[in-house]
Image 1: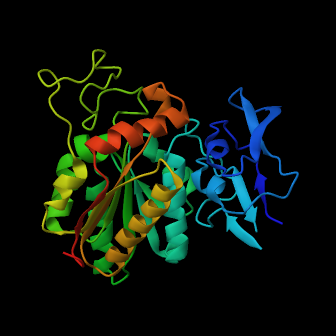
Image 2: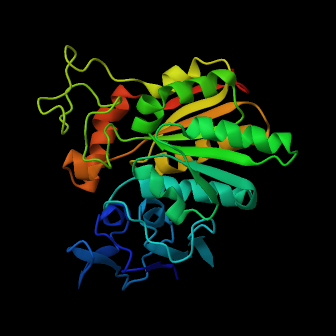
Length: 69
Length: 251
């Protein structure tokens, strides 16, 4: 089972990971981050994550700290 | 099995202080990953410049020197030659913005390339002076509106932009020169390969190696991070074509 870990304190709500995820598993949460916008969270209820690391590669804030496959 | 972790060359618990969506974060991450892969962290000296790129030494866990504005390549020359004279060769690279490398420090950069100094320069090209509020820079493209060109860059008043990588590639002392972008995963992986190649060429003592990275500046372009990436893909990378302009091993 693949999953990622997001450090919500580092997220600046640029949403580049949301657009990159091929399975659309990264969504806006209802937590407001330091830029005044909603930070992202990982929602994978059907174990769809591939562990492709694309979200971690595009994240400019190293907010996606770990990916497991 | 863990397939991704934060590079070890990035300081623990550091948070990037760039604007949301800025490609500087990705560029620093790529440099850190390459330093890890080539096991250079203990032997490397980074030269930071003025501009947003100065923040490098807050995040990168290597020895850093802050150069005066534009003089990063000159400082790198001194550091490299001094260590070579002491028989204690170090890996020296600069991390500069386009204003620092191609405008204020053009003489230092160009002459380092002409002399074929055995250093690596990384130039982040975001087509304006980002830190001071988005003024017109040497790489601002024709028609681009900035704080000091409210009607867009025009030929009569501002002249033409500089194509840094093409100019550096003309210098005989250059071993490797390329331009990369960071607007999607494919390009980011390619950029990492080019940075790695530039670093390896310095390790092999082949001469000046240079990578220009097309970066976004969402704050000063007044676009969202994804719109800024689209602008790089559709407009900027047409004006500044991506690719390798010089590679002495393949030429």
